[in-house]
Image (tube, rainbow, N blue to C red; front, side, top):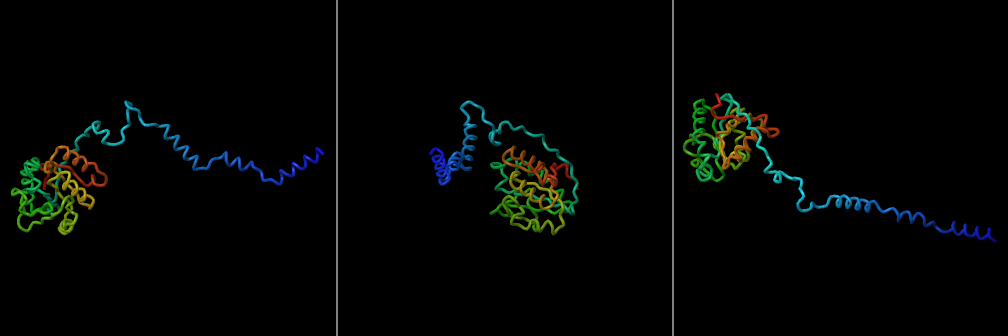
Length: 243
């Protein structure tokens, strides 16, 4: 009888599906659950910083006061060929170059006029720009163009939406000298674009101006160090330019 009972129990076990796999499945949570648990663990391992504890800087704004001014870029003497060089005078107009808005621009005008006189004597191509909505008569008298000299109208990048590139290439220009205002506007953007278009760019730092000294400083650093353009841009000074 005991053998028969044992045999019957064995038969019942054979005829009933095993519950072991189902129990094992319950013991093994799905991958999504494991992922959620892992993420939660990581989150709670790094709780928000308690008041009074130091917070690691996360942006330049957080470290603003810790920034050290880099050494000034070297100003280099340049010698240009008047037949393949153009002098760009950007936005020296009443709207942007006045004592109320940019006194440093007004102070730069005599030096721009002096380089303009030298360039004109060498019959160099001179190109002017005016701001959108402006007119040629807005250019300050000390540097105002002669009739027939090219003038383009644009906002920041004087190549954008103008025939500046066509004028330069039509005259076989290889080098441009950029002067004007604002340093952090027309000068920086036009110089950068010219470099990317393959021109050699000379920027006399005494002929660019802005409302703040800091703007002129960071533009000088940018033009001397920015990827892709720095190799084609030379920072100089008006008295270091030779023809």
